[in-house]
Length: 116
Image (cartoon, rainbow, N blue to C red; front, side, top):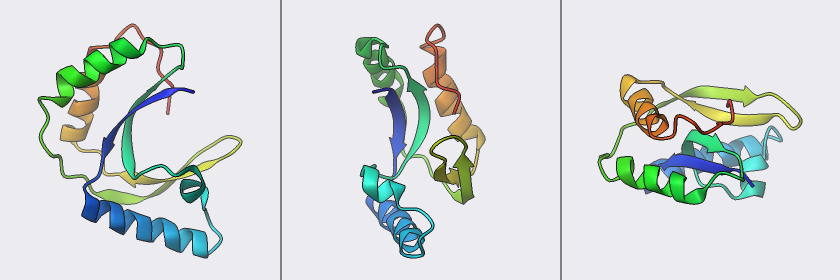
């Protein structure tokens, strides 16, 4: 299974996001998140399952220890195409969020990353 490096939301935000997904599921629009059991998150990168976990852990430890809480707003819904298509809540792309991702990726420039 691939490795995802993610930012997690605070408990209040998780509750609000869960209410959104519950409403979508109740309307018959999407229930994948409930089925998969993923906590609300923003994905910074996804690496193949053959990636050395020690390299990923070292990179996360190096940058994660320097990061403070980052406010993140959601702008709407999006869809990752493909079978199956995946519905997601799209974060507002800010320079601070992009900088976090860039800091992480700069530590792992030679690793292949999933394009989404």
